[in-house]
Length: 365
Image 1 (cartoon, helix red, strand yellow):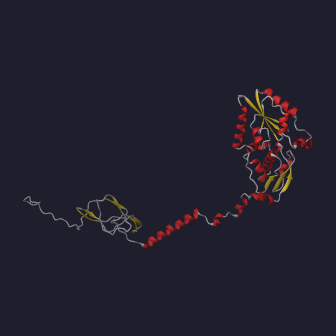
Image 2 (cartoon, one colour; image 1 turned 135 degrees about the horizontal axis):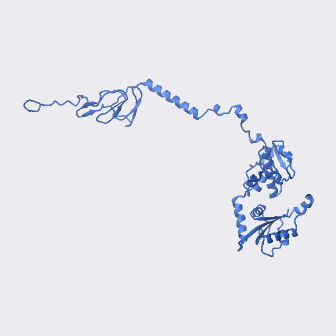
């Protein structure tokens, strides 16, 4: 200020004249955080510093990137991303860039090799293959002949299930047995195709109608059990598993329950009694092979009288493969006897489902 109080002229700096902005160094070490008119930022290297005057700092003008976004440029120590118009400059080092690219490529190839093993790595060693489970054909295949009606088929299935498991073999059923049992039950044994059945060198193994100790040690990889095995002695130790195999499909249960519910009528305390009357070939087969007879009219009258005396409102559901004989010999005058299938022979599967859903059963063989 002059002595006479007049203001002294102040020389304005030119726009290009540099002045040091407080807190802003002209050069910074790599990685140093500095402040300035634009706020805090990180200097990745020392390039052309900003031109600072009392009106502010001007950034070093560099051509904007062609893509208008972030650039990846080599610096003195690493590649860095800079915003468009940044004043940080870089000195390209092609050798370092190529080295980093080689390292990244090598790491990527190692990653692929761990995620996707080669064909040699995927193949098991000979020792591992020796200890792995063999193909089903190598383990052997057991089956059973499919003969007789529904009851025989069920007995044959259960016997195969038990003996194959007892001897450590895989059991398979024939297509004919599958056609008989699968529509009714939730069976689980796999089915052999007809072509496979014809090309297997089967060893037939006849069975008695009861369990024998020799059946625990049956030799042969391709065994076909024959006969009519229906004895509980083969599979009583697997009772729960066999019951599970012969559990009905839902639609079979629903049909049987609907039929029985229709017989209830106005009765409240109904007791359903199934009556199975075996006729047909058994009339001649029983005395010839089993030294017995098929139950007659007197037997049925006595059995039904027993249930009439024990329960207030019994309902008898008669199933048979000789329904004409049943209608002639079973007294239905009391109104508590119903012949399944509208008095005609019904299907074995439907009859069996009705008997299974009754409270009690009268059997004739």
